[in-house]
Length: 113
Image (cartoon, rainbow, N blue to C red):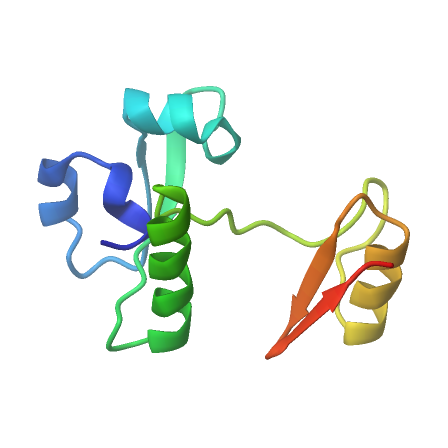
């Protein structure tokens, strides 16, 4: 199961060769992951294949095993009113001055404090 684990099986079957698609989220997705759905209940889904991106697939799978929800939110990294982060230095600066607890940079986990 990957990112699309919470969509209807009929939807999944029709999306086998699609990388990113907008569909209507299920009631379960809207209830369990409201931050991933837009006001019209649409979701932007990216299917992560193990054979194409094994590290990211493993991350999603492990998160799903731990949380019960195999979904990660992919969003821009920037603080309100600030430009999108483009460098590790900018990411570390935003970590320091944001409400984040930690940051993953490549294979490193950086914790605040």
